[in-house]
Length: 319
Image: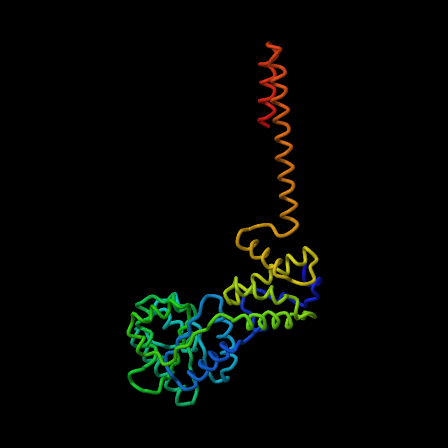
């Protein structure tokens, strides 16, 4: 395991979101501020977009930690139908008797939201991966809050998803109701460098410069600044570095890690060793083939022995 070799306390580049390793680049801090203000100012519908792996889910966890203890937050599965998500919300907010029909359930939800608003409490519903909402459900999202009845939005709805969410919203009337729009951009090279160093520091690395500057530039260029991809490449670099006893990760090692991830190529010495073994095996087979042909040529002069030799060689070759 590379942890002991690099004197790490834990794996620094797990691809799964982990609040322990939270790193907020300037762009992330700006977006987080927009989300917090949008909720406290009761903007109603807030849209956050970003490429897969840019840290949207991690940012939502940071958002939840920034909200005060009186704010009720519900994360909703975007694959539910509207009636299913309405039932889920009522259950998640602890509303036991909600009625039998959609109209009754909506009235119960609106009453609940009104009571919380009068008590000065915020209520937030978050649709993560909201690009997966079907068009019919997306059109009905405003029904969750009585937007038409009052300018003071009782429910804050966060639609969080990949860039195609913006295109989907553009085809609906919901686009006119959006109060805040924000987007997460990929990390710039200097941010990626700080990101890698931050994760190494949190993991207990004694050498924050474990990855050379050229290595960081190569990682950032390949990952296009996407943190999830950066994690995958860096984690693989540490595995290969440990196997090769490399105390520092350079650009050449990064390239081998990328090739291994993309093409399944064997890293470093192992690839060269197997390649040499394949060459030796081919040479041996070629030598045996030449010997067999020579033997046949010699025995061809003996007439009656040739059929027996041919049968013997054919049986050997078929093994």
